[in-house]
Length: 123
Image (tube, rainbow, N blue to C red; front, top):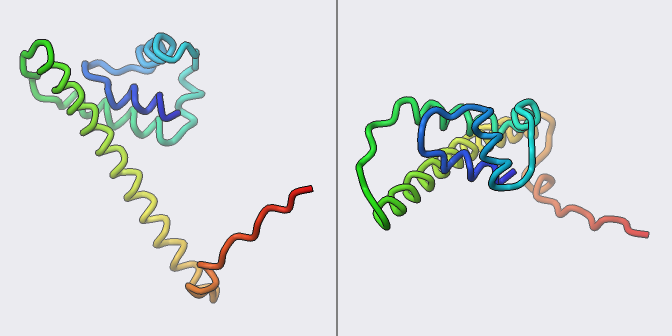
């Protein structure tokens, strides 16, 4: 799914639609998905919604050619990926705070939580 997120992050022109995304995924990854399958992944659904909003509110793009255009597209893609990863990180931190609170509520201390995971039993 990382490749799909990369396609969404690199989407440069409006409109971003599910059908257009599916066509691009099929062309790039040679795999066909339906909207419902993609929407089932929270990271993809969130990235799609966020990128769609960014594109609708985007300022006019600079007219550039050649290497400059390539560099501008790469910068835009990296910035979109950075915003998506920042959102994911914020959600994980919020979840961690909830888990830490619940752990202390039920008497689990830091030493118990940091205990190593036992090795998998293999036959």
